[in-house]
Image (cartoon, rainbow, N blue to C red):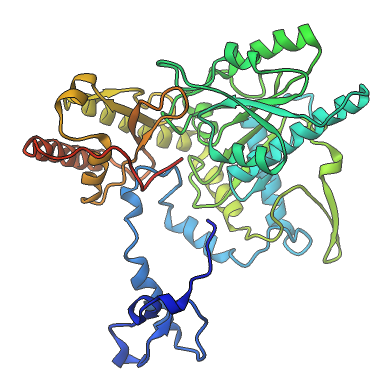
Length: 467
């Protein structure tokens, strides 16, 4: 989030000061919101000032928009509190935290079927956005190496992906001067098409991105079909265009629930995979992971060997210092849950998503785009007849549910399907069948309310959610 300096002269005292209600118990004066105070205060008072303000945030358990983990076990929370002070980057001072990161990289490379004959390589990141950018950088550098070896120019790189990619890929292209080439949505196809993707590729394509769980509708993209299309194209042209899998959510779903789905390093053109440990990896924000199928896929010139506090530190990251507690929490989940535990949790989430999507489809005015059968995420639209005969839109429905504390986003689909407005639900651990039933009751109340308001003016745009 980018913030601007506030002009204090334009604010009233009420807008610029914190005025605690319990001032007589230790704080007699108001406190500036936008300037550091001149004097100190008791820790309990500082805590209460901030705690009271944060009470105005929404209830994270009712946030069905976010993919991010909103619940962890007390033991995991304690481990995270115990390790807040460990600097992940200082591997010489905290060698066991570094060892735990190494173990997690090994666990994930094997979970994603890295070839036994290759030396899979990877690292932790702040989240899957940083991991995706590292994957993009490796693809660009490898492409440039190939072009330079052939004596060809390397000044016009492009990256092919579906229009439904998460915004981090657009950031990567802008920050690293790569032309983004988007496969638009078409009809009932809401993600990438291998045939359409191939049409956008040329000798300057650094790679193609496939998403294992689109944020727009929760569906898996056809990763194996993308691999097969690349196999044919690369054999024909000699281009060696790789496939990066953005497995932000699905990389922690498919190995446990869809083990026969071929999306990972079993496919030869899948060169790198990123995921979010803080999504279905079940860790609080922020930890991500990226794994390359072999160390040869990570150009050596991207790795910095830093002499930090007396030790050699091979590092590939956009960040430097960061706490090691999220990596520790990820390892806790791997030990605590094992494959069986992850399978149970993800299956429960999928079962709840299928139950809830089925019930929403039965409410009458809604038509499902997806049902939560891939990642436990699904989306729906208003039926055509409902659009013509109701006094509300899905933006109105989102606002009405928000009155009850539910965050169920409504948004417009991107290019070629801007006509389509949908709502989406993300089912995570901590969202129970009972909570699903409570949401259904509130949806029924909302439908009844709008039916009683035939003169209601439908809202045509939303303002509180974006991808």
